[in-house]
Image 1 (cartoon, rainbow, N blue to C red):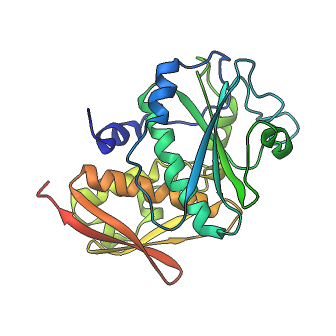
Image 2: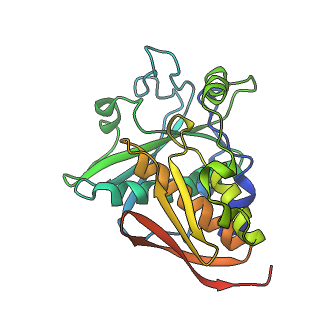
Length: 262
């Protein structure tokens, strides 16, 4: 079987957020394979529990629109719920982003469409469908299903008004002029999803000591950073540089543990 990294990294450029699903359920084997995702990479900061909900009739009562019904997710027949400690703060949200994005990338690898959802859902309508412990809370959910073939007008609009940043906007020159593996990892981060496509991150330092800091703070920034960190880690390892993220002051530093001559 191909390794986790070999399955997830090729999915990075293929992944895109889907808000309009066909209403057709993914193959059961694909969902079973999704739940078998292991061993998950973790940040070692907090735990994140996942629960898969399925409903052939969809989750229309769960999702809301961005403005009224506009932007509402439609036709999703499965939801992956990310549960974290209610007292974990940003560490728990970082863990949810780091772990949840691995499921998103594997879903892409398996041909299952997905979309991160952190705010546009009805909490009460969701919690009636699962068991949440007294010390747990929902960090975010991931809508799953089969995508419609037509273009997603909302996604197109968001990318028109908030386009993806250039590499020079998310990383400093010393990093952009670094080794090939580093350029590959930064490009993987540039393709990472984030709330409203804001990409609230900045990489600095040297190729031997890469620092990540948030460029803005919103309710979703910690989840966004977790997603960026797992894209970086996976792509770096695939390109030959294995490392870990270590907290330092108001950011994180990527420490390289091993490097191959790629």
